[in-house]
Length: 233
Image 1 (cartoon, helix red, strand yellow):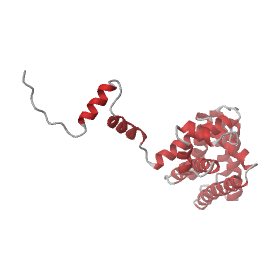
Image 2 (tube, helix red, strand yellow):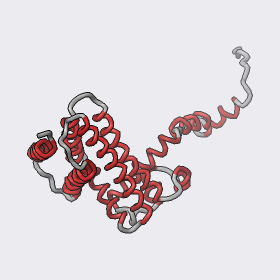
Image 3 (cartoon, one colour):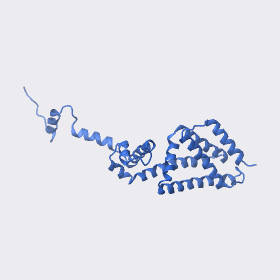
Image 4 (cartoon, helix red, strand yellow):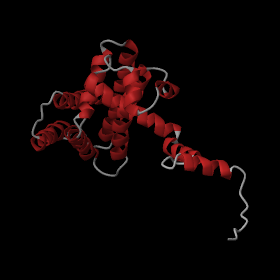
């Protein structure tokens, strides 16, 4: 019997021996390639992964009962991997609070940038937030945890105050523009902005504790309150 001569690449014989010795185990190179594909994420994606895991932990255990070990386990990362992106649990919590604020103000800016009656836009904002609270119970519950944190952690309290002021400033500017354009009657824009923000916060708190008012009736009553109270006479 004649055997054809075959050129064998360097290292091939070792790989063949390994595969024969462990027939059910994938070769090291293939295994390493698989792991590198699975683990490769951008820093932003990894940070988002940590934030999502931390949010779940805070909702389940509360802020103070949650440890960095819990967050790492939920994110399927080492604790060092979590600390690489966030220096402390407080910074993770701050990032989550900031994200909630950014989502709310982004929608507000989107609505206000649209053409049309600003009073109608205010009503649309109210409808959006009521719908959001009803659709996702974790949103109002998380902000309840943030409110509790403000009583026990001074840096978090200061952050929440700054975000509250920024939200009210934004809403005040919207109302002032509506007054100038004749869409609203002459009112104290800042005091009205505080009242409207308090209304939103009150509805949010109701959903946070499990009280779910009739959404359609609530929106209709809010429309009547804002429309009759702010419309030009």
